[in-house]
Image (cartoon, rainbow, N blue to C red; front, side):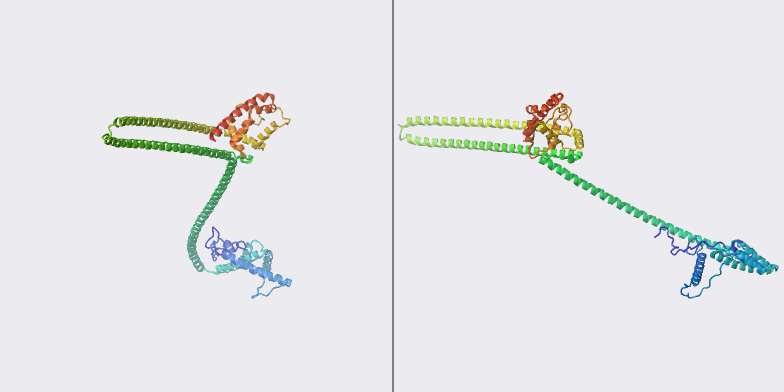
Length: 548
């Protein structure tokens, strides 16, 4: 579908050649002759071509072409089947000079009359020689027009003044009618063109609106596809990053060193280190919480035991009171019996009296002993409670110290995070050297312990347990050593065993042999750095022992 298609050109004319030139009567028609044929400015189908004249010319050309082909085929002996209606070939064009000569020969020396003069003048007006078929056809048509003009000229010559006035009147009337008809048709044509233009404008607006909607739909589809693609790429990147983070965490949990390729992603390594340290902190807190829970459970057990002992003491006191009441009841019964017996045996009264006094003294002594024993037991229980309270106070103080120590460790972790820039520089240095710093550390120590010819080793080339380059003992810090040991991995060993091995390696007595291979000017600095490393490792051992 074309964008600017007209509703009137569903069957546009086929233009096979240029439009014919204006006829001779339209440019040289004398006054008083018939009106020339008006050429259509707009064809019947709405095109700006003279469709009717073009159709006539096209049909004439087709007929002449068929005649030429038949003549050529007849001469060459390859004539095809005869058409339904036989066509006679058109005469060959005659040059204008030959035609003029023929006219002169036909006229001869006879005097020319006005008709012959008009004919010759019209022939002279033709101008160009008809040297091809199209010009010949135009010449033929113009000659026919000249015949008509000749007839009109004859009528003009033989007409009377009355006929001339009547003809003039008719021509004026015809001209008025023609002008009115032209104005009417021009108005109709303008109205038709206006409707066609309005329809074209509506179609153009609709097509433009449809194209805009299609373009917006395509743009929206492209945008959605791009957003989907970006979302998919982001999801893939996040999945890959999660997988790498999980692998690094597994390596750190297993105590294995990180590969140089994993160390290239600085941001991811820092995030994994932070997550690993957070995980270790949570584990330490879980262990501390479990230890506190166990201590609280033991305290609850001791409290239950204390309450049980108090209950037993109360039961014993109740039993003692019950026995005392029973003894009192027995004494009353005994007195009653004694009173009943006194009547029968006055002789034994004094004896019984002494026995009763002795028995009372014994009971008083026993009661005093039991009271003293209960008092001593109460004092012991109070002392035990005070000891337990002191123990709880010591535990609370120990927990406060542990919290302070944990706060110090968190502060140290923050300082390590602030020192990440130095670690990033060290990582870039490793990436350039394309070697494992942990393997380099072990290799250098093996070379120092061996019998190789290494000597005059500078301070910066000595195997220090840090990730970056070191040029002075003041550059050795505890957080750098902690990061080195954490990233190095445990290789199946506990952190306590690794720190213990490093303490043995950096012991001053063990460091005496490697110092002999250091440059004499750098031995004091290396010795000072070794003492710093030994102090840092001893502090790590204390922390590990407390956490364990």
